[in-house]
Image 1 (cartoon, one colour):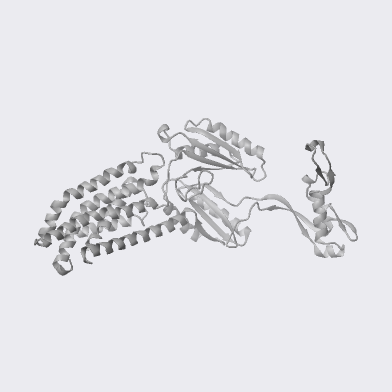
Image 2 (spheres, rainbow, N blue to C red):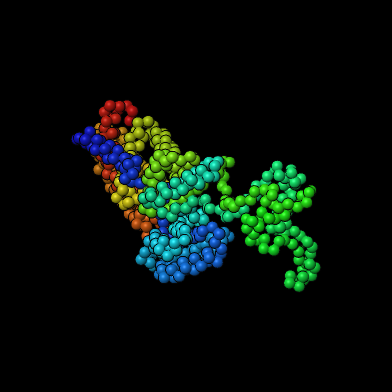
Length: 499
């Protein structure tokens, strides 16, 4: 306490340096930390038009490789309702029973597919069913990075989508790039010429009926007691032979009945080949394309900042927005900031009532910044990030570190009421309260170590919370014994009637 200005400047500098680590990207921020839950989901996508047999052959090739991975306990594969897509769900042995983590195994699967399954788009997702907002159980896996392109022109959306996909592939820390746009199935488009329809005294309904009857068939009766249908009645439909394989010229030569007789479809309509979309997605009446990617080893906020900068510099005709964890992270961080602010206000009001002073509780409020110094530096040293759990740790730490200042101030005021001066009282209180302050802080630090060391499966989510509490308890305990007396003595000297 002999050099209070130097002590204050040093601690203020430490606080500013710790806070600056976050916007500078030295300590990253993300929605949720990654967890090893011994489960992987693999999604295969073959070119549009491939049937279930070819998809099954690709899955069998993948199964041959999976049987050689010793960490896999069992797996299940299946062809989805979209025949060109397949899925494999893998369950690994417990983390204590294998030498490699889930991310190393997933990377090996990607390498195998890249080298041996050239015509297959493969996405590998490490399932995190215990993390809210990251995975919807073991059936639905969401990617942390999602860019949604919005616009009215499908052609422009597709063009911009290819640009964004290429950008994601070039961005460090991203993998498993996937677009919701899938090239459609080949189709034949029939465009009616209404002038020719009037000339032949025909209508669009005539064309629809003729086309439907030729390709889909027309009901011609019922075969009663069909022996091939277990004695049940069977509907009889009549259609052109080989109509399920008609080409462009076959469709043009389909007869259309009109009021003046029959004409060919090609006489009253233009038949052309094209590609039709498999699905059309809309949000707020706008068409969208969703482009997703998984993270490797970069924090989510760092990747989003780089993507936002690059997307703004690109010549995109469509608007874009981030979805998925980006939205969840922003919303959660705002709610946690609001909860922390509200907790500080409530604690201040409570202490103001207890101490019957508005200045004395103000001294105690410095405990939280002192704890934040250690919390953020501890995240830096352990390689963790600012996420929802570390913010919860800051909220919990605020209540824990408050008792240091409260113990010190309460006994100091008791001694002052007994007749001691402010300086004598704060020194005596520091000596008396030193042991209980250190003992409670040590108890909390030791109690949080098992959580910080992630000794159980899926416990990685709580690691950052534990390190924030440990670091905050250490620095707050040490700095409280320095800062609180300095601030208290300054108030006692300049505003003695306020204490």
